[in-house]
Image 1 (cartoon, protein in one colour):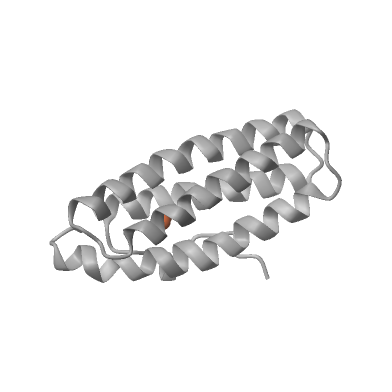
Image 2 (tube, rainbow, N blue to C red):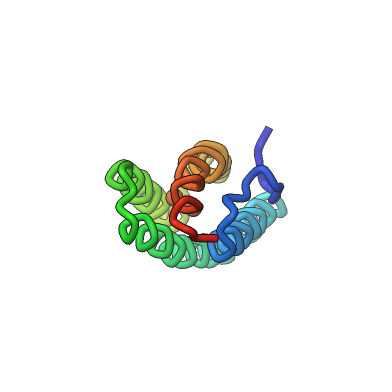
Length: 135
Ligand SMILES: [Fe+2]
Ligand SMILES: [Fe+2]
C-alpha cells in the first residue's frame, strides 16, 4: 500500500530535516489528490513543480550537513538525490505530453521513494548526524 502520510517512523531527529520531510509528504499527498480527483494536467504539473522546487531545497540542506561532517556514504546519497530529480523532470515532461498511465507511475515512484529513501537512506545518516551534535 502506498505510503502517503507522515508518521513518526519517518523522523530522523533533526528538526529542520523533519519539518522539510513533513512538507514533502504533504506535497506528495496533494499531488495524489490532484491526480485522483481528475484535476487538469496544468494543476498536476504545478503541484509537481512545487514538489520539485521544495525537494531541491531539501536535498541541498541534507547534502550541506552530510558534507560538513564528512558522511562516508555521501556520494551514494547524492546519487540517489540526483536520480530523484532526473526522474521527476521526466514526469514533468510526461504531464506536458499527456503520457498515458503517468499518474500511477508517479505515485508508485514517490511512494517507493518515501519508503526507500526517507525511511531508508535518510534514516541511515541519522545516528551519524546525532553523533556530531546535530538535532
Ligand atoms: Fe530527505
Ligand atoms: Fe536524502
